[in-house]
Image (cartoon, rainbow, N blue to C red; front, top):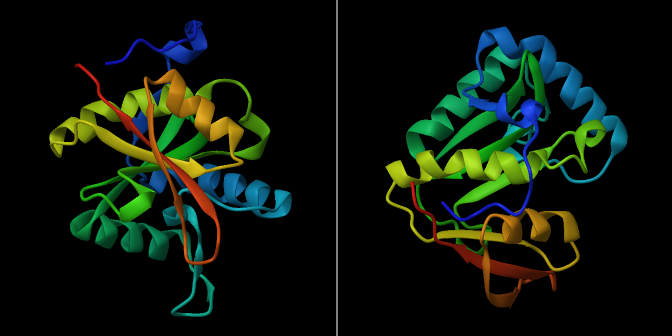
Length: 179
């Protein structure tokens, strides 16, 4: 694994990735309430509880079914957990999804700027290895400084900028890791 340019304290060492389960319901709902009241983009997209198909928010139980279907088809979602607190989530994609890459990650607003995203990405490398992804393709919007730092601190090497159809500019990186 690349050398992460950050010193981990004891709290960081206790972080882990967990598959969403019924036991996470209260924490998930609190995190989503916080995120939705904060505004802005919810990332990874699999966290969203609003169903475009049903035109409503789904229950947590329906959401668990939804992400289980995703797991079977294309991606696995994991919560970043410390004790019983959900700090964020990362989506590991089995196939590279264009400029979206192999991962999508996000930290709940109240827990940002603490290094959790950097640690979360490093914890995802064993899952990415299972799918044979090395290098890992990771991207972020050009102006997303926090995500770019997360990528660079995990050994990301800039590859290119891609202009999407809507004019958004995405920076694409490769991360080679050793486990």
